[in-house]
Image (cartoon, rainbow, N blue to C red):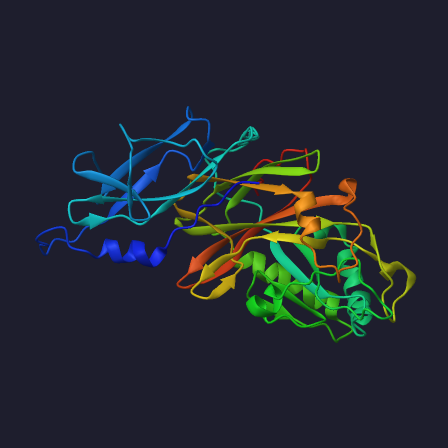
Length: 378
C-alpha cells in the first residue's frame, strides 16, 4: 500500500504568515494549478505546476515547499521516486498559495474510460444512503421489513447507493459476520440503530407503515437538491490477486472545493437476524472498509480525501489502493468475519463538497470491479 506522507499543517500555516520583507497594502491570490494530481513514482513521470497570481501566470521569484522544506521544481516539473502524497505550496514575493496534494504511486495507473459527453456537466444524480443496523438489533427486522418495497424496486434503486453499516451486535446469541467495530459512525454521524443517514446530512428512522414511500421521497428530494451541483464520477477499479487499485476521475458541475471517499462492500453475508424472517439472514451492501478519513484538530472525520478546488467542467484524479489481506488482518479478534469472497465484493465511491466548514455528499456511484464506469449523464 502507498506510504502516506503527513505534514504539520500548523507549521505550514506559521510559515505562510511570516513576513519576507515589507508587506504593502496590495491584496492578491496566489494559486498552484497542477496539470494532474496523480502520477507514477518512477522518476520519469511528472506533474507540471503552473503558478498564477490573480489569474495570471507567474514564473519569477517562485519557491516551492513541502511542509517547511524547499523542494526542487525545475521548469514547473515535479518528479517523485517514492510513492506517497506530496503536499506542495508555493511562495511568490510576500504571497503564499494554498497547498495542493499530488499522489505518486508505484503501480500501473488504470486507464480511464472515454468521457461520452465532454461538454456536459449535467450528471446522473444519486444519494448516498448509509443504513445503520446489526443482527442483534431487535428493531432492525421491522426496519428491514418496511424498507423492503423500496429496495426491491429496481428503478428506484438506481437513484441511490446503499452502504449497510453493521455497528451493533449481540455476540452471545447473534454473532454478526458483517459487524464493523469502528466508532466513526457514532462520532461523525451520531448514528443509532436502526436508522438511515443520507448524504451525511439527513437522518431518517422508520417507524411507520408508509416508511418505504417516505424513504423514496427523501431520496428524490435529496437528488432534486443536487441539480447543477452533482459532480461526475468515472471509475476504473481493478481487483487482482487480493489488491484493489481504483482510479477515479471527478468532473465538477460547479466550481468548488471537493473531497472523495470510498467504501469496500460485500454481498451475501449470512448471519442470523434477531426477530427476523429467513430472507433477513442474508445481508448485502455490507461495509467492510471505509477510506475517507482526515483529521480536523484532534477529531477524525470521514468527509473524504482532498481533491482541492475544481473549476466547473474541469477534472481531478484520485487513486485508492487497498490490500484486502491487510484490511482483514486489521480486524479485531472480537469480529466474527469470514474471509472475503472476492466475487461478492464491490465498491462505493462518493464525493463531498464544502459548504463553509461542513461537507455533504453531492454524488455517489456503485462500482463493479474490473468493469470501467464512465461518467453518467442525464
